[in-house]
Amino acid sequence: MSLSSSLLQHANIRNYIATTKAQARKSFAKGLLLTSMLTSMQAGGFIPDNHTASTLHSLGVGVEFLNTLQTNAILQSASTDTRWTRFVQQFDASYEFIPIIRSMIVQAGIPQEFLFLAMAESGFSSRAYSKKRAVGIWQFMPYTAKDLGLVINDYVDERRDPIKSTQAAIKYLQFLYNATGEWYLAAMAYNCGLGRLKKAIERAGSSELEVLLDEQEKYLPGETRQYIRTILSMSLAFSNTQKMQAVDREYLLNRGAFDTLAQVQVKGGTLLASIAASAGMSLADIKKYNRHLTYNFLPKSNKEYAIYIPYDRLAHFKQNFNPNTTATANFIFHKVKKGESLASIAKKYGISMEELKLSNNFSNKQTIFANQKIIIPILQKIAQN
Picture 1: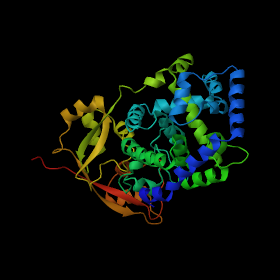
Picture 2: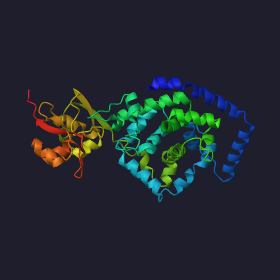
Picture 3: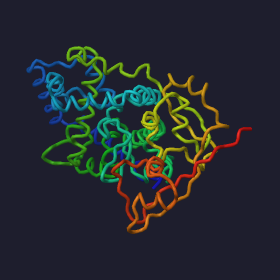
Picture 4: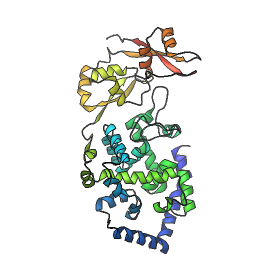
């Protein structure tokens, strides 16, 4: 189902949400509940600051919901809490992409807090893969990715492309927001789907966050209930400069601010090793920036293909790269037969095991299976003009 047809199918969600909100505002019981929650928060000595209120407001969430997040506890135990440590490590591992992704989100008019949706989805790992076949930083399923214009074929999986997948995520989030009218609802729909969210709202008779997250009624799947809490908690914890300074984590706010990526167009079929050498990088490093490429060469079906390199290596690359003298990849496909091994296949085609593994991105302990399609490289020099 295309996004346009899905939007038409779920167009009544936003109207239904508006109706339930109007009813909620008229509810005396609801008023008592909110008053009670706010009184409890103030009695406990916690009054939300402007930053906290602003962060919650950007997602359409009221400050009264903060009491359920226990964000203060997360921050207070930040130095020892294992979960916090894991989040810090994930930030560190992805510092090349985080500033770019944040900038793309903000420029699209989406709250920057959605950066933490990617954290909740994948830990910012372009290699993330779920049992449901969701892949990449934004954890797109194959059919959703293709509907959003991402290419998935033998040579490339653009769900792992940090830039193109973020462009697709922006398109999808804008679609979900247009369907629901609230960013917190868009975030939950991203996780459980619009249809599931619609049923939850209808069953609850409300689109209010604290109602939908009722642990007794379980209107939404447990994963989704925890999902939105995680996004909100991380948004508050990572985005407040003063609180980050207090726990000695301020560097995370600026990490990667000057580490930008450059995109260069290179002839299809070019070996990644040639690109890496021209940029003064290792093959492993160039692959780290281009996880969307299945093999160690650019797709031959493209006349040119965009590849990412660190901006500080761009001048070095331009000075050293010559497409007229650079080795390109020629290859044939081989379908693995029962009983074959990498060694027997390499011997059959007269290539080394190392060449075979390198061309297919195989590890030293890689196993193969019958009917698997692997490539057999045939290297060729392009004659200099």
